[in-house]
Length: 216
Image (cartoon, rainbow, N blue to C red; front, side):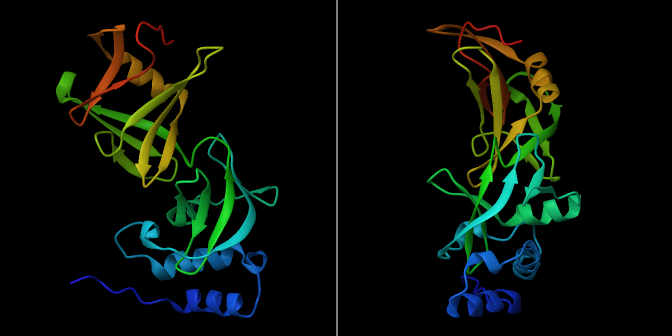
């Protein structure tokens, strides 16, 4: 039987604001964090992918390329708050990032990716290898068919930008030391385009750059 989700008191307050013609400008980060706490499953992040609220506007909130969160020009310094806000973060098919509750959807800016991959743990080797990434908000994901690794390469500089999928469409950008560890653990295979350097995880091979390229 499908589980029915009730709307929390905090979310009901937001509904009342919307019905009274108030815009998302009246919603503070405190409002959002209360909604996140109230609607959590108790088993991790709330099911934001299943929520379809109306778009309510933009918030002056930026996730910078270094993974830091900034609200109205001020850095959010409390890690516990960043971790909680991240549970109601979603990236939609339009490429935009939003903070989402059952009753509202607010646009924010993301410079590079939603998260940083701050650490990688490598278990096994070759085709049996598994790569576990820890993000800056404490999530641990294993790269594989459902959480692929992808590497963008700047066409002018050749600089690699490596990412791993975390959940939904949200990705983590790998810190340079993390990418170095992948390169050290990489395997070279033959392809029609030439030698290809990459890593295995979850039974899949992930290229770390264009075939025939020298990465670092």
